[in-house]
Amino acid sequence: MHRVVHFELAADDPERAIAFYRNVFGWSINKWEGPQEYYLVQTGQGEPGIDGGILRRREPTQSTVNTIEVADVDEMLRKAKDAGGVVVAEKMPIPGVGYLAYLDDPEGNTFGIMQMDENAR
Image (cartoon, rainbow, N blue to C red; front, side):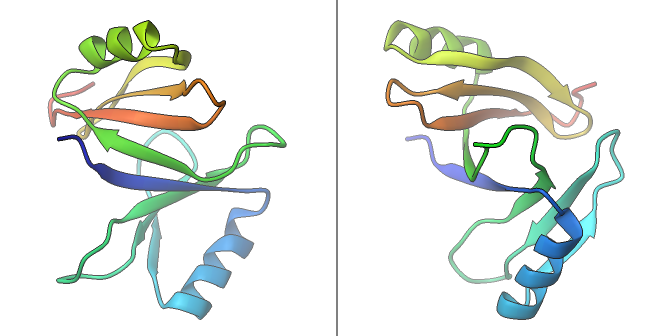
């Protein structure tokens, strides 16, 4: 079964969002050293839950996106499209992490699919 492994929170002002989540929930949030402005969120250790990220909002309606781990992004893109999903961002490498793509489900909800691969470049 495929599970949600990551969330993303879109923010007009990432620093303001970071301050909010740190102050309210005590989350540890650090800037990612990758090529984009992105902040890694650690929500805890040794307890149920997932970690995520905060990014600058690209579209006015962009909100929370959950990412689901899959064994093969290409296969899942085909399967999702066959079931009525729409690809909104094609497969892309996330250096040192894996391959990521974004889709909308038939109801217009955006989600990500991630194939883990530390060799992704």
